[in-house]
Length: 86
Image (tube, rainbow, N blue to C red; front, side, top):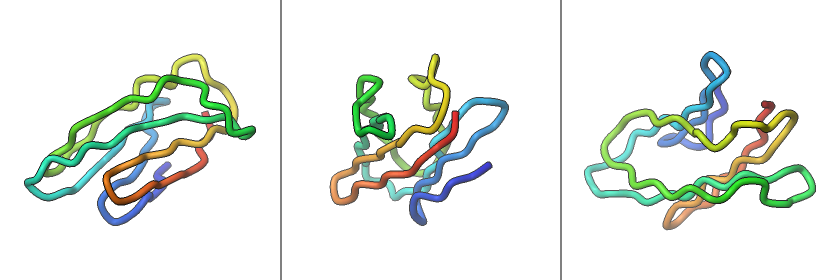
């Protein structure tokens, strides 16, 4: 199951683990991952990540969540929000 966020970032679920796959340039891009319930309440502390080039990182702070949530990826010039089912 894959949810595209844009041409450079995508969320992917593999074996009950969500991953952020990215393809970026050589400059370091700082992103913040935030998780909200459908009422808009933040349910986990935000995670800040520095990304460069391309790769895949697990989104670890989803433990204990069941249902539909919003994942928000915030970068310098873009805010991307997608719903995910956990």
